[in-house]
Image (cartoon, rainbow, N blue to C red; front, side, top):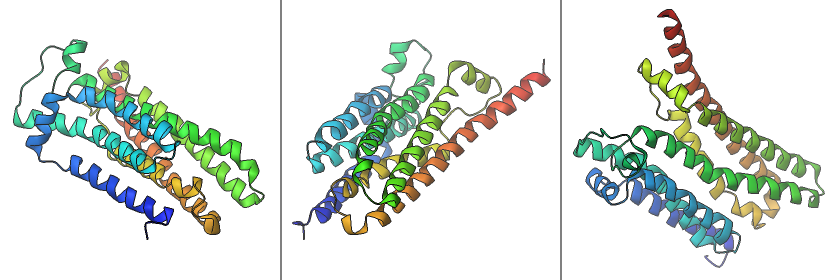
Length: 261
């Protein structure tokens, strides 16, 4: 069965899922221990080059198993930083009083800067990958004689661009000025549920891409493109909902601020 490349890819995805779940579902004590060795902010920063290496080198060189494992590790680091920091806060409860840059970077618990760094590096990780996909789709779309196939590829490109723009706008709402406004009225500045599921959707969409690019679904190309479009549409909707979830607390905080002035 594993002589079939499609089945090999499915086995690789399963191995990557096991790696991801194993790291994410570690007990809180182990997560707290891990962030004491590698602070959450450094995990946030390191998961980008791990993902880039997996996608831009291993994936394009044909090392699909290693590429998926790197992407799974990158996704796990993205989850472990926040989960490990919260576990450390819960188990150790050591308050952070010094808010200097390097102190926050090396603190094993959660930090105000960590909220921004985590979100920023998540976008810096997946953004270049999706831009590369758009460029390659644009270059290859002319090789398809079927107009339906071409329009489905264009639809994916448009949705990716809109999703990336929503990500950028959402990151701008995390700037210091907006964060101060939120904190003034005790509004939450953490990632909302839509943002978390959107990030998961982005990683899953990247994992579903190889059967298309390696021509493993030639006989069902249109159907698979419809599936990828539908999945990307769900991810785009979650990205928009995430931005709306960031705007509403700002509107409430700004209204409350105007009422008190």
